[in-house]
Image (cartoon, rainbow, N blue to C red; front, side, top):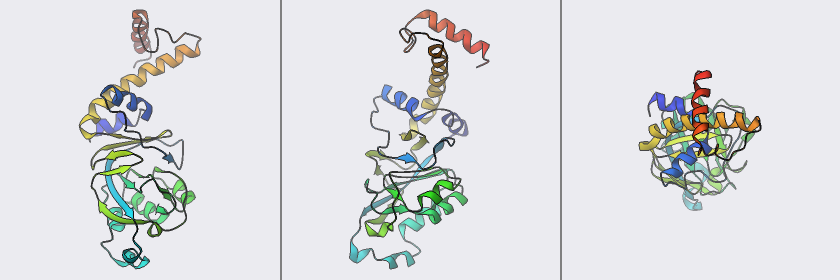
Length: 236
């Protein structure tokens, strides 16, 4: 992902990107049931690095598996690239934790851009205090081994009913997390910046008492002219 694309996505919302995706026929890119542990932070932007869990089978998933240096969960934490988002398929099951504060701390120190699961985190309050954007369904205390068996790294996954492919661009804000196909990231970022600018103009006019008819969406030429003048006056 280009640095300029990343910078633009830091300034737009998942809602705006969702509309831009819908215009291109992509209707199911917003991860369901996931929320930010710490609202009010800057956007999370990074390329997807995936971890997939399957239902745990007790004879293959005792606590001793963590002694294996090649355990997929541990390898994922140690190999997720700087600037990437570790995104976990936990089968929408928050009854056992996808990860805890120590793994989240390691990702933060390694420079990863964020952490997402459609399950839950243990030590949720500690993760919320870390300087890494994190998104989950709900807090969970039991170890992931209770229900989840880490099986694959950096393969296509499903997270919150959305297909996520390695390298997809992940955008998170206070509304949640959306998945942007890699080949669309640049043009969507450009479009979303312009959409956001117009929405700022519309918001200003609506708060002044203006009707949305002909303004949102823009269907009257006089509003286009006024928008262009507004941009010039505001140095946009």
